[in-house]
Length: 171
Image (cartoon, rainbow, N blue to C red):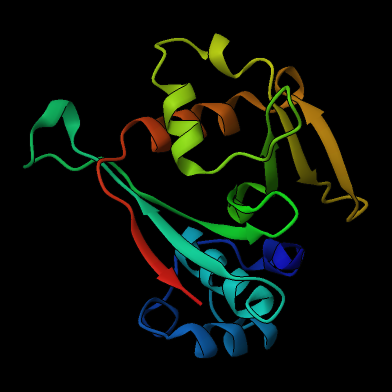
């Protein structure tokens, strides 16, 4: 999973990075030039994985209480097509989440998460497992919902719940 290279680059993107295309983002990241947010992290992930499996950018963002004049903060992540599961699968490289799996062992996509998250409290997510990258070792670990940092769960629930529209870029 290519996100560990991005850790020292996290921060407010400069104009060059903000306006760069997918290939230019990959070149800037690999030469350690510029800072990245979720959009650049997602696009960099696409640039590195698109030859292995179909992958697409998912942009979430919503409006406060249905008021179209007050936009909430957005977030970019990816979905990749898992041929074994025969479905698109949610992945949030910004938060080092490779996959979220339900109790039946099925990897979930953004729509699945949105449905689960429609319940007002976090209890609907308690049975989920998260495959994540450990930054210290670089290894992939499986963590239960209760082992995930509160801020990651809060952000995940916020961005999934408040999403009205998904915009896809398929590589």
